[in-house]
Length: 248
Image: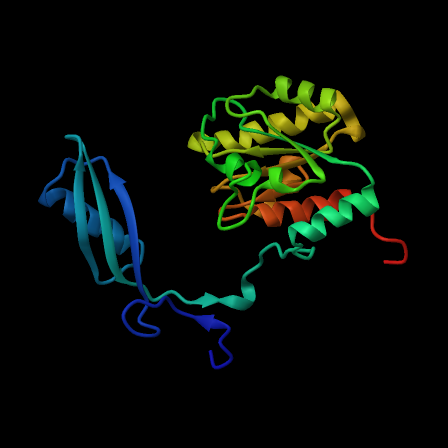
């Protein structure tokens, strides 16, 4: 532990193992519900545990926030994540790369597919106002961006991509009940593969519940998780679609 590779959760003091978790049980609010929450917390390894908040959801459910200590350790050397394999570029650098190396506008389509009507994610990446202090892809003068909005069917998206000769298709998925985001992404990848084969555009999906390491499993080129900014997406598009400079 001296090299900092093994750590414990931090709450009140360093290494005290304190954690906070929330969950809902199908139990009416009251003392029995709180006892059930503590029993679950103990089975999760939280000991001692305290119910610091509970709130009835209707007559048959109760929401809890539980606080307590765990003895589990985290081995940082055993943590494996997908590292970014490309540099972050400024809007000026992105535009310059597209103009000088691609020598035409980069065509980007974006949409929410299936029954997903939550456009906040795709809007944050595409719309001029952007997200987290960064302008969206509409701000990049060398990109031709079309936001198709919400509840776009996969066949409609394939048709639009073919008609517009899209270089990249960006899809946001926020609705995740029963893994809808995974099913929709696999449907997307299969439809583009069947319709366009190797000539298909770059497929990029994103949303708060995606694991960035799942791209190959889902059949797409890139997966972005929560907190992704327009600059990260723009930099990836240059990395994946714009030829390298001669001798680079």
